[in-house]
Image (cartoon, rainbow, N blue to C red; front, top):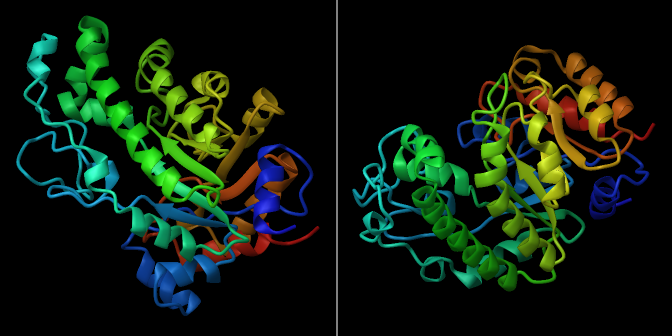
Length: 345
């Protein structure tokens, strides 16, 4: 099987020769050590050298205030959005909004002005045809809405002023739907999958009630999933933390793959997920980045991959349990992950 065949079989929970494997998106501070270990000079060469089944592609976005689509909104109205040091907890520009009229001052960006269609085409054409071409769309409308108010105010508004909260969230979802459409049209027929996501989990459980997730996060998620499916794309949904309580809602919304199985979070143990959701959805992740990949040996990493392969003979993309490999993970452990995942038993 090639990478694409392996991926689609995994998503459909059909037999595979071995698991599909994805390195994720190595953090910029982790990249130099990985480049040195694999003897490559850039992220493009790394994706090929590591033996990754995926080739992830970011939507090119450049505005006067932002250099990444996940930092498109200037919630602090200071003319600059730092994509590396964003926060959800600082007061946003809507912190004092009580009525719908209080939202009208904000100038919503038009993604059509800031997405270079030719660059979209260049990026997809750079991806090898036998790899799974994965669009990193994110479209994190819940996190953006939290940032627009400040997280405490946003969560209070869900209960005390839901009309104002929902009005902002709807605008953000519409922005991402338009941005994604531009990218999907520019790369039509060449993409295989899309990653969207919103962090709604903590180490011990959800950061808000399951009902609030259903009322305020899932509807936007469903629109994004339906859009991707209309282009024939599989959808990987990302949330860090313990999200076991709302996985049934994500399945109902049409999500194809749950990412990243944060294995040390409550209820996210691979065996528990297998028992609860076998045959209903596929997963991606499972190789712990909180302890194992940081402090473990390559042999310990291989043992974990073997365990995951036993639990999930199909239906699991083996990957670190965080989309960004950080600099505290030894490259030898990443090598061990892929070496064991790629063995044909």
